[in-house]
Image (tube, rainbow, N blue to C red; front, side):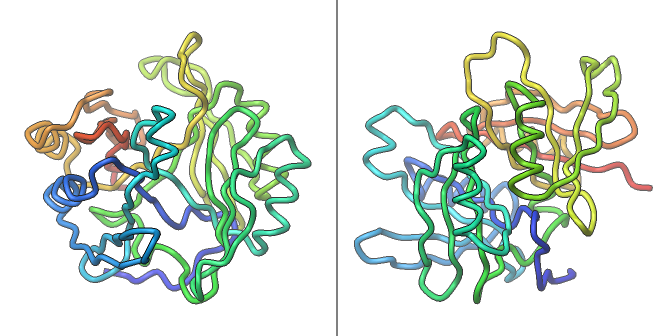
Length: 264
């Protein structure tokens, strides 16, 4: 298994689960993906758990705070994006119409981060690495394989993220069987970073980021997830010329996707 040693700016570097029941989440994801985990006592902030794949950090989970729970926020997977300067990114986000939910702060010696919501309501974190770059494995079965923005207005999102993160965009027509329209790929300096597609009209949810975890068999993983109490939002579906995916909700309600890319 190749070990990731650095993340270029614009890379999705850390999928993080905020949940109402971390013990149940640990049981679900370690069974589904074969992950292990290590708990870290953060004192008054509670326990922060890092998931590992064959010893390599690949994701994390923590207990949602009382404020989130009181507002009815459901469990969710958050995403982190590598930046060179978290303070500059937060200031830039404000100038572009974003909202900084948590101003830049140091995470001990690991890095510096800020929590930002884009103009359409999608929340993400920016991460300026110090001693911890983020995930140490990517694209292997049981690790982050792709990250996608489901956006209310893709034009607004393109302007915001291309100016904030520095991504370039590549638009491709989606097959008719996928609903038509266009799919946007975010491009960083060393290749694709992730993607974006428009949310269907009338959907009540705000724009949001969705992590895709790589698996060897989407159908088998989806079946196993269902047996563990997951909800299927999108059943296993082919993406012509690209691969196969499914969108699932874990037993606490956090939504994620699984994906197998077509081998070339």
